[in-house]
Length: 482
Image (cartoon, rainbow, N blue to C red):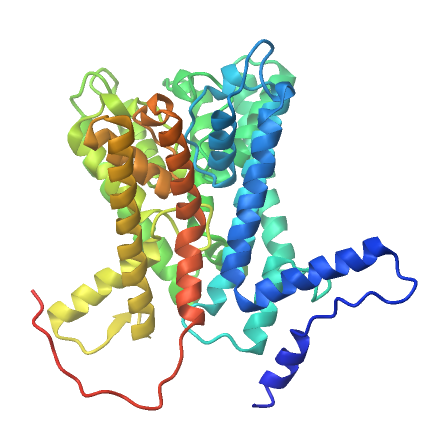
């Protein structure tokens, strides 16, 4: 055993013995802590899943309480579970109207669930992402323990503090601007403040929940006040979808592109390309559609195209009903939702860096290059393997989920596929399948949302942490491809 492994082995030894005279509650707490230690050291991914499920069920029980519903309303348990899962996974799909079904207490529970789900996942995945692509030694295990907040390493590290402070600062700034916008729209002060806070948290966490029965549609007009509502929501979604590693780089070096690391460059460039591509294609397809953009003025069409391009990857807010869009737009949105946002972000999907790495690999193969290169940096083959694995597992989950939902709901495949991708990519755009599904379909979509939220990061991290070095190699042989 190496010297590096010895302290780690000692640190993982259980110390659950209760000292003489020690209160039973203290001994029980220590045993629970040691149990969590063992799970975290053996499988941090498993601990992440357990924590998410426990938090999800906790919020579901809170929403099931009569106090969470509007007076006279009855909340079915499946709707409470679905809404809690959608909030904790920051998806935004709903089976009941947020404004009509939930009381102020219920909406506060949803908002807290969004914040816990978004910030918790942001914290977890930001630091777990550090381990991707290299072995998990003693230092990486300590970082992972700190990210999981299991208590063995004392106080929370500076990185976690920066994440929390930055997230709350962005949300506070958005809330101020949004509150002014709602005040300008004629809402009372208290209502405007509540809506400003709600949309700030919902947009930055890419959740897509709205406290209005009609969402943001009433603010779709040419007035100047609409810009104080719709534009900050777009900014919040974009910042949240970039991921904290990118936001941290922007804080440290500003907009000096040459000083960014490779992850930040790939994330921002790929996000910009997808944003522009979706904007152009949405306008081209929906420009003359009288049910969406056809009756709008030219400036309104252009802005709505931008709004849709921002939201279709993870935001979940909408100004037009998705069933009214063309089949081409639904297919375009499917692709954008599946791509998602940045790694270690509040967005879902397979992540834009995954897409960028695979595209660069295809480009390198077409050029005959021996290595995958981006911005004068060579991308390791291990990263490419992880990217391919994430895409294949995501596609498999969508395929299986769509088959199950079609069998359960008997609804059209195009709408079911859209809903399943939206659930897996935690986007929140809907064709109405969620609300129309029977209980079995709602539970299935809840499971898909959970897998989509924690699956990609967990699987990628698990694959990276299980890497090992072989002391031997087999002879090479090339199969026929294509």
